[in-house]
Length: 192
Image (cartoon, rainbow, N blue to C red; front, top):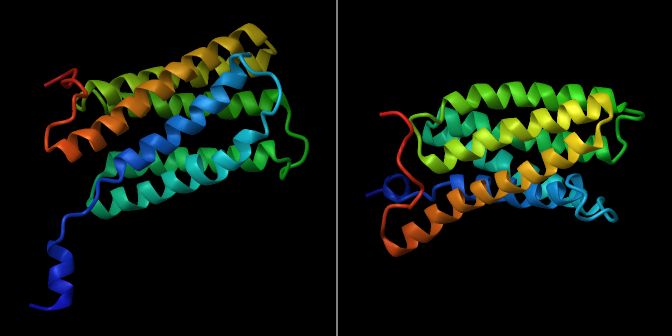
């Protein structure tokens, strides 16, 4: 047997927990600032956005592509790119970006996420809830930024915290279940 044949027969790791965890941790930290729970030191999110929210999700997306998972590839690669955009924008790499422009981008990601949410109807409840909460988060933050409504932005932060919890639970349930040799407790599909 050739070395190449041995490599193709080995079990590959599921990249979804990495992507979900990178998304969840970065979202949780940013959302605490968006909710107004912490008001100083928001630049701490930049490193997370560049590497764990961004790079780790881009890698998870590439691995999902390699596994033939179109939904996982599209989701992880898009949200990885979102975090890289956030890193560059918040870091001032694009110059003076207005709150209205930021709001427009967030609403556009909300539209994308709403469309992706429909793709979770036959997935598990964990993914369904993650995408449901995420599109609501994007719309609240986007409209809040566009019209300068701090209350909407804070609401978006709180929903973002719930989004992070749902994503983290979904990703870590897969890791724990796999290590115990069981099916992950992430709920049944919404539709059969």
